[in-house]
Image: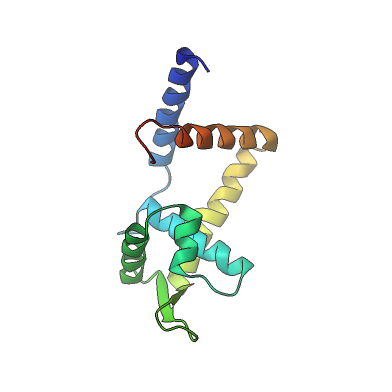
Length: 146
């Protein structure tokens, strides 16, 4: 890639940030990162019976202190509940509350379904290429991880 195309790619990153900033308003006290955690809990529990803090950390690729803070905030917002693991009381299972499930339905499942309809003309292969490109961009950032 030459520097001119890198500049175009970085300009597109700023555009993508603007798109994210115009997403529908979240419930009071909620941040976009909260939605990502709720979505992760939802998806993990759909695939397996339980979800732990470590599952979320691994999926979102963030530090344990960061995910612990987000979990505490979501608990305070009554979006999730922590339940001590039956086999090892040091670990917690995470469960969405009714409010958390409703939030995922409204701000992820329904919203994404409607937006995907508007983008039906975009080929999935192009999306995969874009995802791979942005992943490569993140992985090669000078100065370390994002």
